[in-house]
Image 1: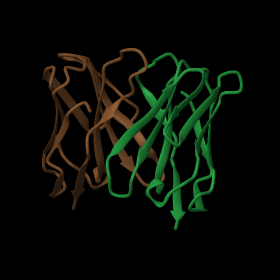
Image 2 (image 1 turned 90 degrees about the vertical axis):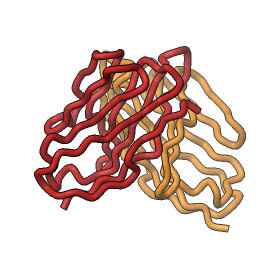
Image 3 (image 1 turned 135 degrees about the vertical axis):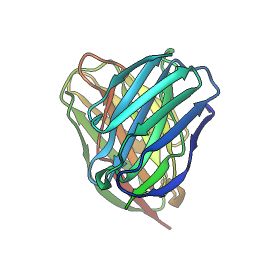
Length: 113
Length: 110
């Protein structure tokens, strides 16, 4: 597998606080993604990265920012968390080689009270 | 944007039955993804296919590019196959930004 570690795995915090989720990969994949998964919506892309310091927005990027200072780490930050950002967050990586699919982390369950 | 629709939303089967889950998409694509998610668990990519058919164990995925349709079949289903199955298609013009279906919840009873 792609060796993807998400941290923390669970977090409970209060509205208005900043939150940072970390995705760490050991496979040197160039492409990394942050998704959120909510009932009735399926997975939705928040932000993605196509290289170090190269990032772009997905379909639900409002209220989120990302950074990628090195290949192995992709950080997702909620500058001021809101209850609507309560969700399960998944990180994924992609080597874009042949027919290799995306590899997913185990997810972070975030609750904002 | 590619619209991805899955059917059925829920499926209950008896152990040993042949299972079919369908996926249709609105925009022509280069490849379609099938993923599996066990309850409370992580997401595993099953297949990425651009034409024809792929098989892995008891799982078979087919795609018809002209009809913009793909199917996931499970032969000799087993309770451990109980999971949510998700298909995903690239958003128009981008191979690496995916649009996901809402998933099919499969329950296989012993």
